[in-house]
Amino acid sequence: MRRSRTVALVALATLTLMTGCGSSDTPSGGKLMVFAAASLKGTFTDLSKQFSTDHPGVSVEFNFAGSSDLVTQLTQGAPADVFASADTKNMDKAVAADLLAGDPVNFASNTLTIAVAPGNPKQITSFKDLTKPGATVVVCAPQVPCGSATKKVEDATGVTLAPVSEESSVTDVLNKITTGQADAGLVYVTDAIGVGAKVTSVPFPESSGAVNTYPIAALKQAADPALAKSFVDYVTSEAGQKVLSQAGFAKP
Image 1 (cartoon, rainbow, N blue to C red):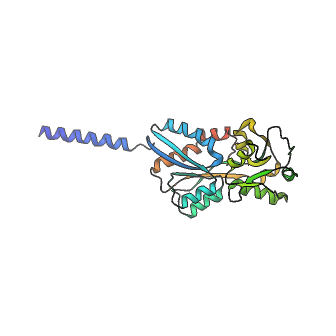
Image 2 (image 1 turned 45 degrees about the vertical axis):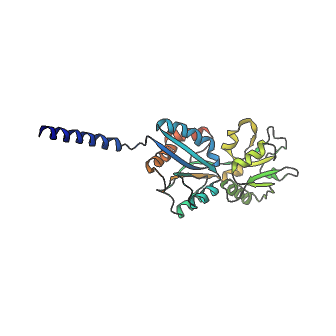
Image 3 (image 1 turned 135 degrees about the vertical axis):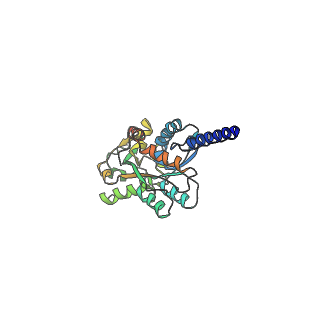
């Protein structure tokens, strides 16, 4: 009788310990796949390092691309846990496809700037100057958030650009400028900051009418819903916002 009672107590203690271990709200292991706008590459890479430190055993992997390409991949069944878009339009597509586990949260905003070769050899000082004869200009494709913002500026100013190419992501635009394949391009302020002296940034007042808001959300298909939510919470936390601010992002 005494032995049976001892065994029962041990079993109860073990069950209690297991239950306690499983009740933690903070995931401590696993892999997270985040689909994020190309303009978030540097910032989210930095954020993931601290997130992994705070969540031992967690590895964060990314798929960085234009937001329109990302949402297309998601609607076609690509596996991911979190989606961060560079605009609300493409997040709305994810909402319409019933991909989200909860409401998206706006976490940052970004504004266009003109990126030119160091020293600005073409003397581009305004949005209209992008139409100067002999100046080769690259922009984002219209379906990409940075391209949509560019179109808004064109409509507002009445200035129609004649780009030599339309790229699928803002990082592709920036690459054309840093490698000398184009004289100027429209990128986000954060992208110009991110490459430092490789480009000269030319702000223009009309950009204030085409600010992009960035939303983030956990996905229904997330392998570990708690881990996905934890990443979203970290991005929107004070620590996450500090990293975003340092990179040049504004509040949403």
